[in-house]
Length: 414
Ligand SMILES: [Zn+2]
Image (cartoon, rainbow, N blue to C red; front, side, top):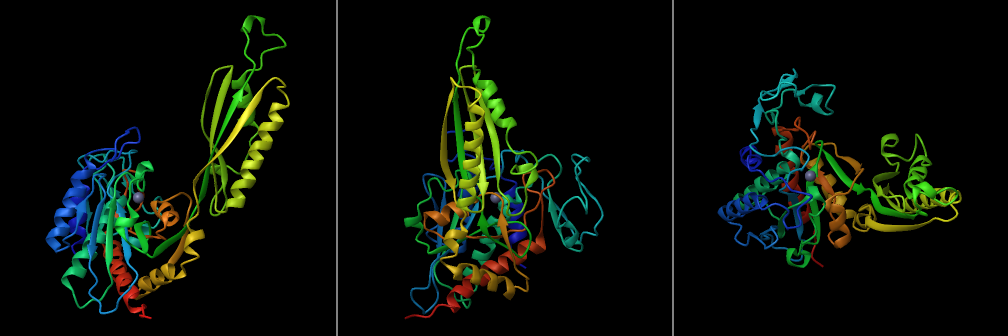
């Protein structure tokens, strides 16, 4: 047994909710309460260079204890913030020991019930110890499960010098949930060759693919007149915008009609007056060519709608958001291979999955740190039904330690 549960229970009681409307960095100062505490604990473990930088990132190094030189430097990364969607204040974690599979009714709001059949993967957990919140908050397993797992692995490595490893870097980031987790990260200072975010869901999963993502903004310039004298002249930008939305494919190419490897065109914001309107879209696909096809379709729809409004025009702007990390990871196959081996060593059947979204890892991969995502055991995140099992967290610790071993063992000096 490791310290992972005890750490997890402590960390979730520290409110670290991030704020999408804040301009400061980190977006909320309270995230530092956890980051500072993690540094104190790392120092106590003997990780002497652990510190929080001026932006709220925790950096730390577990130095190599191997005779080999030039072992690739591996980083483990988790985020300290929790989702703005659900309160993370006064979280009361509850451990349901040796769970028998019956409904788990959360005491502070008995409408909140974890039921087999309603929550996926829960049926795999009978006999395990499940941790939930009490019904009025999220739990914060996303991503404090990952934080606790990395900390417990660090404790293990520091206490067991017989386990050989290269330099291991630890990175705890703020503001992942508001899309700014990598904004101020210093990869030169971090000095790692490869990374793993520990922020995945089911035990044994390894995610090496994310969406590729663009944003599209269509700005429509209509023809504005006094409405009382508009006959034959007015071309209302709001109606043009509505026509474009109405002309989008029905039953396909939308978030509500796609799954697995299918992409979509998704309107996310609309605003305007009769003279001018803007439509904002997010475009998602697993390939860049798929993104371009969807953007071409949206442009075609826009042009077709505009043929009904000869005095009006539209600007069509595409902005790159992030790219599928598989593009990068395919150039470094050992990153995935070693993770699969580390899981097999822990007795797991690894499952490769793709994420219908982006991760800090996809951004880090394109910034120069190839970085797939390994499971932390977190489930039903961003909700009051969020749960994690102690056994899954223990396995994640084992996989992190195994990864350190695998990178050392598979390295041969030239
Ligand atoms: Zn997360």
